[in-house]
Image (cartoon, rainbow over all chains, first blue to last red):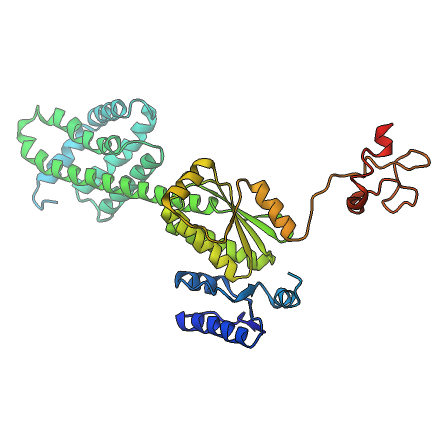
Length: 73
Length: 318
């Protein structure tokens, strides 16, 4: 599963936790989650909040996310 | 300024003794700045100021006060830029008092007026001091901004690999700037590997390490892999003795090691250029193209397969 958050400009701790939860829940179903298109500002905010989204893979854009899911990278 | 006639009298005195006072004032100022400005230049500046002081004292027009302050401000700013000390700058104003006093001392009846005049000069002196420090503050903040701008380059090492050579101590403000620039470059170039080179960072304490970890985890959130390179032996010792954990972040001793790692993760490999060594098996001449059917040493990338067995290439052995 690919979650594209290119259009997300502002995040809070709730969204950060939600992304993590979605990742772990989908792993229970045997699906892998890749979050793609995170903006620099969003990444900085999440880091400042101490959320590193461990357990969820990330990629720069949708193409690279697909590559990950296809097992190329 | 006093409303009575005292200022008029001192103004008249200054006007009458123009050459003497300005001459003496000039001498005092030139002596004070140790000859860093020429006598003529000082003289010109003082003539202007002197004329303005007289205009203010005689209350000839209401613009005089503003003009005098503006002229003083300009003088202080140029002194600050030219590297004079605040003392030397203020001395330029205060020595007018001294110059006038030397002449007033002869005319005892002017002494009360001189006190009012002296107060005015003190105010002007303070003004130069304030303007001087304001100009200095401006210079310092400009330099700090320029340094911050200069100190965070993000360079592209290879397709998909970027590097951030850090020089100097990392504080929160700089980390923020480095992080922003790194992330923006990652997005703009689509690079998926970043190398943070800390060769130029003199000491790594817990705070600096914390900043580095933050930068790396932010880059990871974007989907880029980060390597920290340029860890010197002393820095490594400090990191270990402080008990800092870099976790699963890869660290390398040199930027070259980090580049090699990034290249191999990107599926690239640096191989020696065999094309120059490649000779045709029939003529012994240099091959015309890598796909030449007569080529015995398969050149360039395809060479990886045959390279160890075919060394040295035939042309070279001859």
